[in-house]
Image 1 (tube, rainbow, N blue to C red):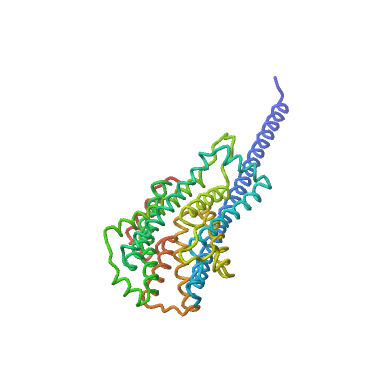
Image 2 (image 1 turned 90 degrees about the vertical axis):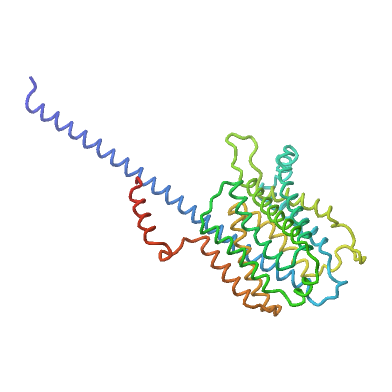
Length: 391
C-alpha cells in the first residue's frame, strides 16, 4: 500500500506536468497569434502599396492625357501654313512604331536580357496565343472607321454627347466579360461623367463650327448606329485586352503567362500593320514627303503618345478600364482649363457645369454616400442586419 508521501509526490508531479502543458499551449497560441498579426500586417501593407501604385498610375494618366491634348493642339494650330503641317497618318504610324520599340525595350529589361527567348516562347512557339491580341487591334480599326461615318452623319454636338457613352458601354462590357458588379450609385456616376465630358467639349465649340454643322447634311439614324457600334467596339477592345492581361496563371503550366510588355508589344505590332493598311506609308495628295512637318513639338507629341500607350497598358493591368475612363474624364477638365490659360480658349457656363459634374461623379464613384443622404430607416435596417449576421 502506497504511503501518504508517495501519493502527495505523485499529485505534485501530475500538477506540475499539467501546468507545464498549459503554459506550452498558451505559448503556442501566443506565437500563432503573433504570426497571424504579422501576416495581416503584411497583407495590409501590400494592399496599401497597391492602392498607392494605382493612384500614381491614374494621376500619371491624367497628366499624360492633358499634356498630349495641349501639345497636339499646339502642333495643329501654331499659326504655321497648312502646307507645313504634318500628315496625321504619318504621325499614327510613327507613334505605333515607337510603342513597339519601347515595349521591346521594357520586355528585354524585365526578362533580364532574354528578349529573344521570350519572343520564341510567347510568339513563335505559341502563335495562336499571340494572335489573341489581333482582336482588340481589329476592334480599334472598326471603331476608328465608324467614327468617321458618325462624324459625317451627325452634327458635332450630337456626336460629342453620344460618343461619351463609351464609359458606360465599357462598364457594361466589364460586367459581361469580367463578371464585375457596380451598384446604382456607381452607374449614376458613370452616366454623370459621360454627360460632364460632353458638356466640357461642347463648351469649347466656336460659332463658326456651329454654322458649319447647320450647313452639313446629316443622316441621324446612320450616325447614331455608327457611334453606338464604335462605342461598343472601343469598350470590347479595352475589356478584352484587360481580360488577356489579367488571365490567371494555370497551376502547373509549363509556360508562364506573357508579361504586360510582351502583350503591349504584340498589340503595337498589329497596330503598325493596321496603320500601314490605312495608308501610313503613302505620300499625301499635296505631295508632302514622309515625316514632313515633324519639328521638335511633333516629336514631343510622339513621345507622349508612345509613353501613353505603355501607361494605358499598365493601368489596365493593375487597375481597370473603368478607372481609366475616370482618369480620362478628369484629364478633359484639366486640359480644357489649361487650354484657356495657354491658348485663350473661351470657356463658358457649359464648361463649368461639365467640370463640376465630372469631379462630383468621380468622387461619388469611389466613395459611399454621406450619412445624411441615406434614409434613417435604411441605416437602422443595415445596423440590425449587421448585428444579426454571424461574427
